[in-house]
Length: 68
Image (cartoon, rainbow, N blue to C red):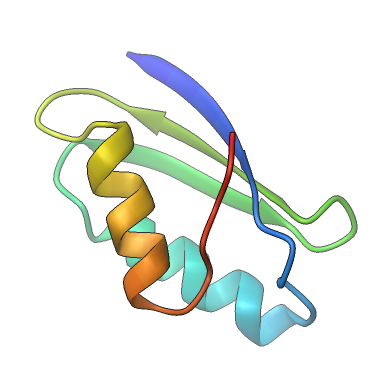
């Protein structure tokens, strides 16, 4: 299991937090996803088949591009 934290600058409300968490938790291999509205981050616990590219693509597809 690997834990990564991504910066998501455009998280601005609780709706954003919920959308990000739901999108990531729907990915096979993601066991935990917690977005932080104040810090503008999301922390993800992942294992195969999930990987960094899949996480970034999922976030991009819902309008929340991320950086590490």
